[in-house]
Length: 129
Image (cartoon, rainbow, N blue to C red; front, side):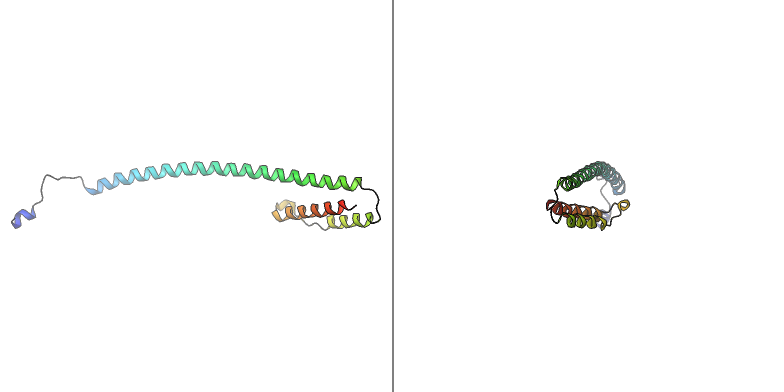
């Protein structure tokens, strides 16, 4: 082969510039990515709505159970007959209730735990009446 033949490029293999192919490929990839992103966002938002619903139901049920326990303590106190240390136990229960420090407007979990623990203590003391 001569130098002149080596410098010439074959005319048979004409391809569009690589730049045009990469632009259309990028557009397709970007379109698919945006579509997957939109679908993922839709699924996530639906799952978050479901989580919100579960949280609402769980909180409501927890409140119902806690109220039931308080009603049971009240019924136990009302039904108890006089025992020798009944007055002391009633005073203990009153002090425990007065010592409760919560801030319901803040909606803190630790306040719910304090109430739950207090109800458990009151229930134990009431059983001894």
